[in-house]
Length: 482
Image (tube, rainbow, N blue to C red; front, side, top):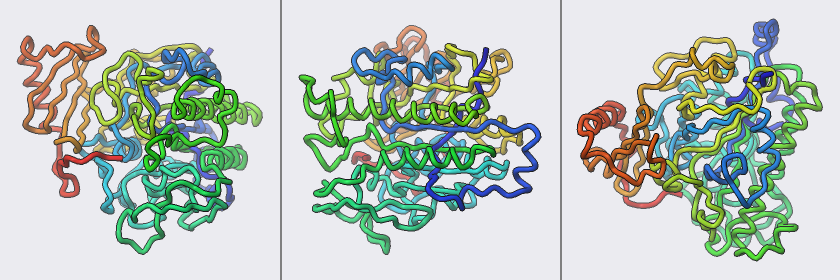
């Protein structure tokens, strides 16, 4: 028995409107014969490798995600595009690693994926899919509020600016390039994220809390699925939890209700964090239930993953629930805990039930995989390999990366490569000493093997040097990203 291999980039396309979901007759007719799988990509924000039960979590309860894993495939060596949100999403959308992609960090200057650049969404839209992104955009700092629609999404509903997404009770959200006012009233404004004609993204702690953005997002995602049930669709459901409201230092883990978790003898931020994990699990289950109700679950690939490792903001301590599992490092590290992410793919008609893959892949592979599943040619010039053979139960046909590459511009900059069982990290970027770890024996990256394998250190340095393309937008900085 197998599950549908539609597991890559389903995202929760904002579905409050019907206009954005219209598919051209030519596009739909061209794909109606072999109807390609629907794709739902659910992306959690700052969820650690060890935060869900099927990846080792012992305290927090995630029954729906555990069931999803039993009904599909767990990827145990899958990586985010970066160790922070903006570049990680850029890698996912462009199919290019952080040495090549447009957005390589979180900065306030206007840098974004541009309309002329190929994206995951534009590839699927061209293939006849209705496309939507719902939730946190967070792909750089665009100088307009139509950026998601400009690069291939028929529909967008959420936060265009990543700092705006830190507020769970915003005064407004963006719907297809227009401001949608909410009923929340905020008393403390943040400093403007930049001098702009756009409205203040800022909002601090809401005095009047009525509409919790994550709840609005899942309702729109469900609506999008309902109105596109009869055509191929791609939903990018981009959550902004369990990220913290970084402006609330003591307890930025904001949720509408703690319910039974209020009785726990835990610090308040940890209760909020646990409630966020509970809600992530619940909302993923609601999407899976709707697919079954509509009779389309067999041909829908649902992917669940996270944009980077666990955070330590808003009063949350990643050690409290052992959020990075048996890995070293957290968000903003290039050790495994910062970039290896829990990844599940469910596709009942195609993906083997209760299966586990140690295939080494990363966010950049979503573009090639989506093109493969949609039946179109994979664009050239990408750092992307389709993992469809693995999903379809043919690991012998699976191509492999020679290496995976990451670079990060904070803290003096750092680079990392994964090649085979080896992982190398150089810090500072370009000039630092290279550490070398054998992940087959040293998952915690505790034992530097560089002195014993100078030839591998040299090879890792070549990979790093060859992978970095200079970009005037990206300079090494000492400050910390959000």
